[in-house]
Length: 418
Ligand code: EPU
Image 1 (cartoon, rainbow, N blue to C red):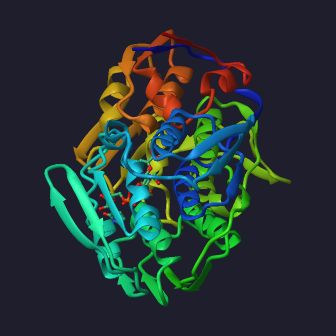
Image 2: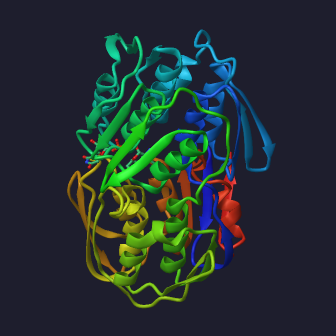
């Protein structure tokens, strides 16, 4: 077990560079399974989720090497599924992303049901539904899925919901299917678009033909490609909230402004002063902050992955804020930790919380429930009086590269101890 030790009270100040998008790295690495050629992926974050994906893919026989500080070179020519690290697959929800490409490549795949973090009940029905539409026969034995096809065929897939990874799986299976696939109710998060750009660079033919509708003309073969991941808008949002909550002044780069539309409009409604200059987001001193209403939604709505940090910001806002996350029923665990630190918050039901501020927070010994909740509690520690001890700190490294080092460079007092 590891801990972050945080001494609160310092305003953040300075420049911070964010990494590539965690949730783009996962599908894009999975997509390299679709070709025997070399792929080179740039701006890959050095986070433990990426290390885990690399380990799983190596157990498939993929050759993967760090060829630069943030560059991976991948070759999947000699993949075979005999030695798959089943325990590792089971421990990671994102390993569901291997189903589509492996089925497209080998016509048969057996994988354990993926596990993952404790943010709610996330069924994989939408994934299986999409692959079945494309011609997979699916059977289930104990904890294993067995998928088989005589050849994937283009189809119309109306997804049951805007599921990010189900959309990605459907796309990765359809690119090599025979004929045309239409995916309706497709998720269009920036990371889904990033996967599409990468696949098109590999020779796929994917176009967006309407709102949340994708058209895929199947091709016979994909080539290798070199590709740079988009910057992580969740990491950008996390630093923006940390700066606003500490009444600091920071510059965050690089950014893609259009990915931040909804996040920035919520920050404006709270009274956070921000500015976009070239490829940087500047957060200026912001005081006072106003209470807000926030509901998470599929993109271009407000991302569920950022609702937790906004909960800490709400403790510093004047009035009562409402945060509503209809997507997950287990994503408010950090609120009880915030209450221990002095927050005035009422959990109304598994999806909604009311937070009244402004209230001072006090350092406590608390824990990280999941990756985003962990980053959130770091921000709480940064504004708290005294010392905060955040247990299970390693969870945060699943998605935030060197977060403590980056915060120290912004004048924060935070240390990681094993
Ligand atoms: N859902 C709805 N309505 C919708 C869309 C989704 O109820 O319109 C529900 C689904 O039923 C599901 C849950 O929301 O239970 C999650 O949705 P989804 O299937 O899109 O989640 P996912 O694909 O498993 C990805 C990210 C998550 C992120 C969600 C939502 C990856 C590897 N994971 O998961 O990332 O929270 O989309 O945007 O891309 C994280 O980074 O911390 C993380 C958990």
